[in-house]
Figure (spheres, helix red, strand yellow):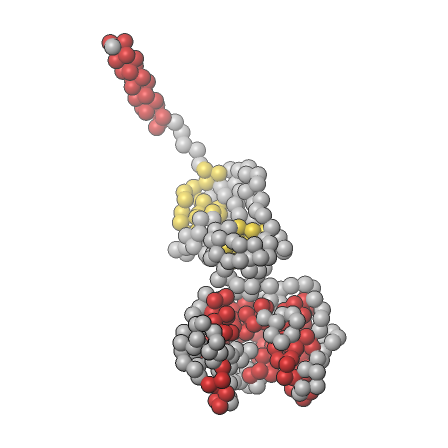
Length: 355
């Protein structure tokens, strides 16, 4: 027994000696994380180095300088130029359409950029809605930087030239803010294709709103007809609440439900948000453009980036009424606006303009 006690006391003494010695060892600065980039997107937990300090993002941020914005938490001084990247840190699986993802899953999209699931989803396209996916910047193995949302191929001066009589509600800033939720819009393909898509979108919303003048549908007699009572969720805002609003004149309770679900906004219970908030209004138009086939066979976005022609965008928006000889004058009105807008942007309109 006495030997065991002596051995135990000896062990405790050795441990105490270590406790005394360790604090006097010189502490070395942590390795610096990858340098902060104003164009990169960071989400909560991501780290970056700036002014010889490591910083950790508390939530989503882009363009906010560490040390000058509350989104960044100072992790202390650093040195050593970032150290050796950890192999495999950015080795995430490729995104697969139709695959079920849960919150926190990280995937590599077809453009090489990384995205993190903000909500569970059945394989929605990461470039369609930031409700389900956020751009993700990895650490330790390199950085992925999504296209900056501010680089729109249409300048504000060109936008004003296109819409000289527009309602002030339809602001340029509202559009560019909304584009942050649809990072592939007017950013896919060559510069010509990007400008053609922007012109096509703006030409169609020009037609739907009288040159971005009308915010809501003018024929009030139609208002009660946009409630599909066969839908299980019904029309909680009232039978006459789902009339056309915004740049694309979003209508019907099922479209407000689908758009709201994709955008993370309750538009089924409050469809009036589309006529009150310019960014939301533009988002609903971009949601339709990027995700809906309508009476056509492809989304307007896919029609333009795959060079199927402006005529296919008309078909996807109002083809059942206007195309195939239904209303040639309305089709020509859209085509004329598209030609005008491509002229302002300095690109050829391409072929297949009509439907």
